[in-house]
Image (cartoon, rainbow, N blue to C red; front, top):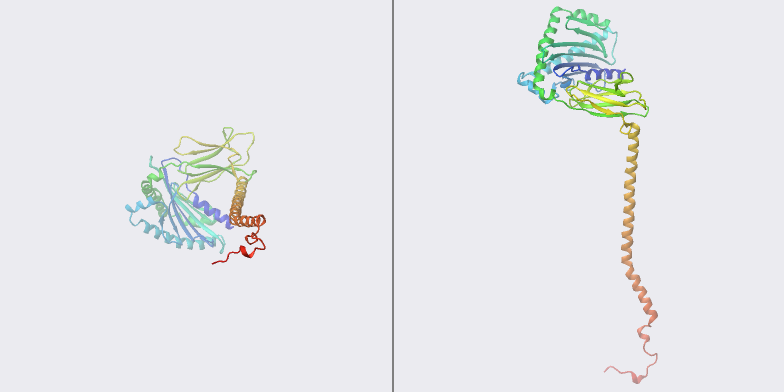
Length: 377
C-alpha cells in the first residue's frame, strides 16, 4: 500500500501538461495533503510554468519560496506576492486537513495512509490569445472529481463524489471558477512567461545513453538534460518506427529545470538494425543513437569493470610495495657492504702480514754478545 501511494504521489508531482508547441504556455498548481506518510510533509504545494518548477511550499517550512531566480521578478508588479502565496497555502493546509475527515467517512475509513491531491491550472497561446483551464481532484491516487470548464459543470468520478458535485454546482461558484481560469490565472501566467522568457525559450539538447540491467533485460534508451519538455523518444527497427515491443515512460523533470525520458526495447532481433531516435521541439534534426552492444552500458559490464578496477586497486599497490621492498633491500645490502668491507680487508691484511714476516722482536738474534751492546751514555 505504501509503495503504491508513493508512486501516485510521485506521478502527481512530476506530471504537467505537455507543451504542444513553442507558443503554448501553461501554469499549473499541485496541492497534496497526506496522513501518516513517514518523512513526507502533511501538506505540499508546488507550481510549474511550462513544466518547470517555480514555487514550493510545505507544512514544515511554512513558507512559499521561488525555485528559479527569475520568479522573484514578479514582485516588481506585485510586492506582496510571496506573502499572499504563503497565506493561501497555510489556509489550504487547514482546509485540506478537515477535508480528510469528510472523505474518510464517505469511504468508510478510519486512519491509515491516505492522500488528497488537487491539480489545477491554465494554458495560454501567445499567438492566438486562446486560454484554457482545468481542475482535477484525486483521493489515494485515483480520480475523484473534475471540472468541465467549457460545460460549466463538475464530473463525479466516484460515487462518493456525488455529494461534492451537488454542493459545488452552485452557479456563483461555477462563475468564480470560470473567471479564475480565463482571466486571473492567464494574467499570472503571462507575467511569469515575461519574467522567465530567456529561460523558458531556451533549447538544450539531451545526453542519450543505452542501458541494460542484464543480457536478457530490455534495452533502455535514456535521454536527460533536455529542454523544452516537448520531446519524443522512440525506437526504430531497420529504419521503421516501432509501435510494438516498446514501452515509453512519462517525461519527468530534473532538479535543474530540464527533463528526462526513457524508452524500453523489450526484445531485439540480432539480425536487425535498431536505432533510438530523439526529437525535440524547435530542433529540425533528429538525434539518433544506433544500438551497439559494444557501447551498451549494462550491470554485467559495470560489475566486470568494477572487478577489474578492484583487482588493479589491489595489484598496483602490491607491485609498488614489492618494488619498494626490493629497492630498500638493495640499499641496505650496499650500505652494509660498504660499512663492513674495510674491516674485513684490514683483518685479512693483518693475518697475511703475520704469516709473511715475524714480529719485530724476533728479528734480532736470540743471543747477543755483551760487547756488541752499546750502553746509552
